Image (cartoon, rainbow, N blue to C red; front, side, top):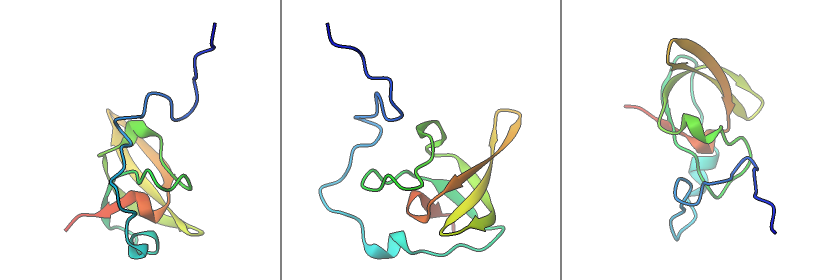
Length: 94
């Protein structure tokens, strides 16, 4: 019998469905300021800096930068969590 996959991206076929076109390069090089509000929106075409799929759709605040990525503070239930996310997986809130 075949062993079941239990990897990081298991059961993600629908959650990480990708559009037919690759996103613009500007999405990969966007800059954010400290204190800016963002939405976590994973980009399936890029593995680098992808947050855990549980955090998809969460609204957070940029608290610092880590190299090319950003540290985002989110509220999960009653807990405050800090996750490191690459810029292509973030969307600015206007």
